[in-house]
Amino acid sequence: MTRLLSRFLHILVLRAVQSVAYGLWCGKHYELGALNVPPAPESRFTSPPISPQPLLNFRCSTSSSIYIAGDLKDHPGIIIDAEVTNDVGQPYEGTLGQALNVIVSTKDIVLASGSVVPGTSGTVLPLDFSALSATGESYIVTCTAQAGVNIFTVETEAWYLPPNPYGGSTVKVDRHSGALMVEEEDRWEKIFPFGWYDPYLTNIERLDRAKRQGMNMIHPVPPVPHYAPNNDWTVTSTYMAHAEILGLGVMYDMRHSLTDLGSVKDQVERFRSSPSLLVWYTSDEPDGPPTSLDSTVDARSLIRDLDPYHPTALVLNCADYYFASYVQGTDILMLDVYSIAMNPIWSKKWSTPVNSTFGASGCDNCQGNFHDLSRRIDEAKARLRVMRREREIPVWIVPQAFDDHGDEFWWRVPTGDEEVVQTILAVNHGVIGHCAWFASSATPDLLGNVSFISKHLYEQRHFLLDNAHTRRPVLTSLPYHDGNGVDAFAWTSFTPHGTDILVLAAHLNYIGLEAKTTFSLQLSGQIKRVLFGDVRSTSNGDVVFRMGRTSTAGVILHIAKESDTTVDMDTGEMTLVKRLGKGSELMEL
Image (cartoon, rainbow, N blue to C red):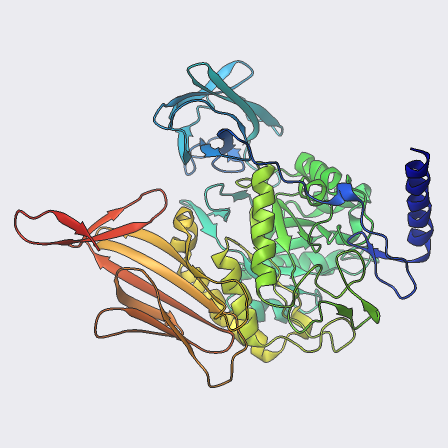
């Protein structure tokens, strides 16, 4: 015991000395001469053990993040999820066919009731707010499910607000898709936020350029300590007003004010009435340098008190450093994974080795390929699931789209094709927003390709947003020697004329400039429209993709209504059957 205590005190002393002498990033020292002291074990996210018996992961979330009194365009509802798992939830002894009786209440007022089948997700029950008062505070809602002797209880927040008293925009998060919802005259419009970080707040013409390039959002990056270091807010107000004229949403950045809540209060009160305000951005990579674990929660709580009509966002940089603590303080999680043209085992900037316990190479715990991005997204979503927050916190991407001029960790600027690969790969893995870093150092190639892909994502929002629950992988391969590195996902839309399928594919490998990877997918349907890339039909009806070095492709397939197709309405999975003749049975192909 004495030896263990001595070793523990020794490590504490080393950490104290090293933290004074050397910087930390993701809990690791990275400068030449610093000791290799692993990050604290408690900083790592802990996944639950596998249960020997089935568990019911019973959860509830309001369909929209907020509701407005008197609004007839978005009727209140609550989403009930009741998946049977082996890692998250409470012990479940029932059968999948035995319905759960669900009651939703607050302060002894029943808001909803109904039945839900175990093993399902996405059941929506209408909420009755008639006995509630619209206030500026949230209601704690209790959801209880019972099947026989099994009783499951969880709590969630419900925001029932008066109309925005500040006269500005009102923005919701759609809990079905993760999309933002902005109010139009006759409806709430779901949007896929697509924009860029830009430092030139004083250059109004850059807003016009962003609009021309198909963006619907802009993120101006402030100097220290905020947009008006001399306390003259005229330029900021002019910028916000011009964004409103163009129909651009502004992600308002308070990165330098995270721990100065007085400054946060002043800025929120100053700009919460802006019609162009889309999101409050509270923190930029708080998991990088040592940052108070309560800081993001404190900032979000204050903003919710001052302006519950707009969501908050932050970006995390580290692979696994106090993820749960920082994510508790946001409504939107952004990830910046800069794995292009970097060395995962050596820091070009600091001239030191890089591993899981020491060093910084520009992409924490990365391998230096595109799968770093998809893996980080998948891990974040898996952690949100364990936290039981996956419906409440959508994930956005911050693509690597800048030139650091050789000053930092990267050897070159990404190409436009690489930016689009990042975007399609992220969308395939469930990302629902895009804000690239960094417009001031982006090349025409990057800007042009971003403009190209933004228009396609906007055009296909019916698939990506309205039918987000049908997203599924159809071909994905992990990186390995001579592997093709293809990532393809599909979304399904049911129309009066049949079934449409959107397929987005990304080819991740750096094959020869003239080389092609050719493959077909196990999907039914005829080509309705090729959006981009080389996709064609063969004589036998197969849909074939021919993809070159770091390329993308998008296609819409169609199955006519006359075809005998069975569809799983929850997942969008389809089985095509062929009729053998009059009186014959149906046979699966």
